[in-house]
Image 1 (tube, rainbow, N blue to C red):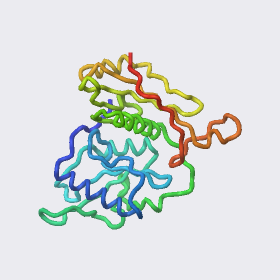
Image 2: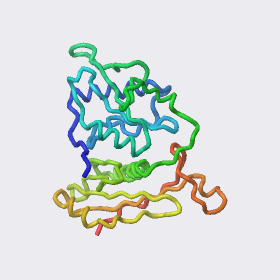
Image 3: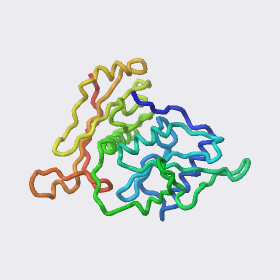
Image 4: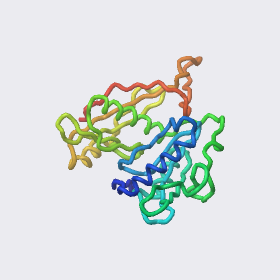
Amino acid sequence: MFDIAMQEMTPEFLKCWQAAGAHIDKQVQGGMKSWLRAHPYPPVLEHLSFRLGNQVFFVRVQDADDRVEGPGSLSGLLMIADGYRGHACVMPMTKKFLGGGWIADRNGWGLVDARTGSVVDPAHLVTAEKIEMTEWELQDFAVQVVRAQIEKEGYQLMSWQGNPAVDPAIWFVGKSKGPEWVVVRAARYPDNKAKKPENWSGIAEGCARQSKIGHFAPVAFASTDQFQSAGEIPVPLWRGYGAHVRYEGLERGL
């Protein structure tokens, strides 16, 4: 079992969260181009996340005066950061005055290490090292591909999450105007299709109270350099580098 917060952000915390995101956005010339999470909807492990170069950062926004609290927990933040081999950060925010706006409590990016409390400057942590995408990272990428297609086809998303150990990954309002669920699996070259999980019946049973309509979404990835390389040795999927994506749509679960 995994403790994933499903509560909504309160109106006041939403203002704090929006100010935190705007502050981070201003730290990069032209704005942050690689947000991983920049929406307020549950489920919540981190409040904000982004990639800068070959590094990924997960942020929990906090009221420095402990008057306003956001959803989620520190343990959830650490879990997703570890899954990505990324940086878990806390961003203290201060309300300027009664009825006023929110500002970062620290200088620079406003981030501190969630474990040590030391100042975090994302730009100084970026290196030229190639880092292979983790299983969590690839699963999250696959979920992005599937939910983008679901939205493109005109369906309303209800929730989504990228934890590879949690099923289903996506809920949406389907053709029946009721909830439907999706189990997403990612595969790396030379595999060209992910396998349906062996515990499918258990997943379906767990979802049955909300919906008996489930789908399987296999997504396959290959490096853009794969077919330019000699031989059939798999080229790693490097973080921040290009990838070919193979996704042929939802398969109705049986």
